[in-house]
Length: 299
Ligand code: CP
Ligand code: NVA
Image (cartoon, rainbow, N blue to C red; front, side, top):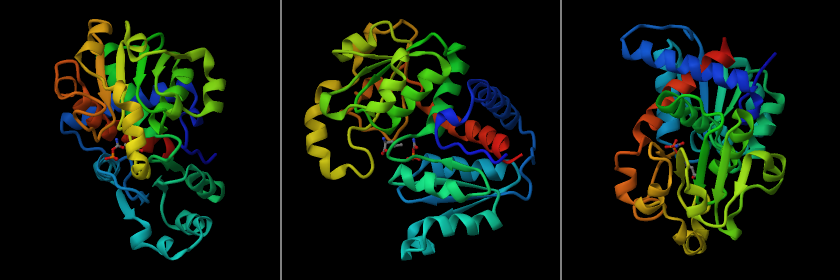
């Protein structure tokens, strides 16, 4: 059966955990200098409608490290920019490559693309979700603190694509997501309702952070929301993650941020550059988590 990774729940909890376990193995093996060619002769097409540093680099390097190849497509350098239908592009790529990773403005574009695809389709970020980031975040937590099930995770900031992905993952992996966000930037309503057993909507960032094992946040204006930047900044100003919030968390709490970050906005420099921040390990784990995902989907 052709599998996709468009949302976290395209995997069972067991599969999600197995991918994390393999990611940790792949990381050790790569760091030891071992050669692996599990994806020899395989090609991944990457379609980017929006900018990317980590996603682009980790998928390209990951394919190369597994003996395969990645191809960078965007509307500007393909016929997508000249109006070729997304489903025609999907049918063509199914004839030529082994998987597709897409970063799109609209989540529906990925769903439409996948609806006719005969090869695995991976969501590399949409306006709704960012599931690859959650693989890396969960790998990082497991490496540092062990099991994430039962943990308390605090989301401070906009109810955006990353927040939605945390909600889905809380339900899948059985942790509590304590969310503090302004009323005008709430997460997806349907998603909140369907995952309510694993989500706590908090009245303040302080309430969310109290006894948290992980605190995470994201930029106030996501890609595509820049024109709304002033409103978002005004709403989110009281939601900056600073030392005072971190002090309320469990003593061994870690701070994560999917990056890119804006120091002095959603997080203070002393938090993101401080001892409890694990953002560089988290970013590096994009590579290993996605290599594991690629093996799961392609092999
Ligand atoms: N976190 C993340 O997806 O980063 P990029 O936008 O650089 O890919
Ligand atoms: N919420 C951010 C995440 C970037 C990785 C965005 O969509 O721009």
